Image (cartoon, rainbow, N blue to C red; front, side):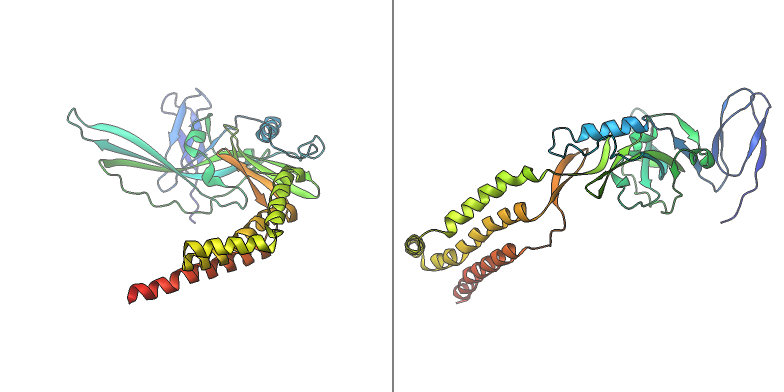
Length: 328
């Protein structure tokens, strides 16, 4: 990268001397306080957005996000929450001005687009509404040294994506820049595990959050499916014989398929009960909703493998003879 030398400038309004700049920036005249834009060729404008909420409010928003969910009482307690971390993440900002040509005359429209300029594991920046966050609070010329005194500042590592073509209009001007947006990281330690919530620093919306789940939450489902499996699996052999005879009365091939597939349904019920008894679950959510996810669960459990084996055999019995008849 070529290092640009600072350029001495004067305010066009009062003539006061401005501080030297080596790249594009938004400045305020130290003499008359006039807002000025300095555009250096080859260097994008670099700005930062002030956060709208503090660390205590970020923790309060995280607690409110989990209200109504069955989480342990000690979760997010006073002594378990670490000091919230403020992070400034860069986004590529591109503003394209294009002209529409309706019958009344040309209309100029600005269309901004944003893309993350860095990738941070565990921080889903693609979920951040960068367009709203960039205009939520006042913008300032990026002063990385000042921001680093109270936050973590990431450098851009990702190239700006290619801008798609615009249908129905002609681009007359295009401006590119970088804007650093605030993000809060709220971390809580519970049962030797670390749980983290990522919040938009301007709106307070949750981008991603994890929380432990009470083990008793899934107990009713586990008991219900266990009793269903025990009832079906413990049916007398005479009942099973009557069920198989009923299947073959409907159709000989369908009866064979149902006879093989019925144990798969039984083991499907067992798989539901096994999941809720054997594995620990956690809450995972964002502003769009909350879902539960198992912890350290394999791709397929043993009941699921047995279930899939029965279903595979039933599909084979249903498919192979029919195909031979169709060909003949």
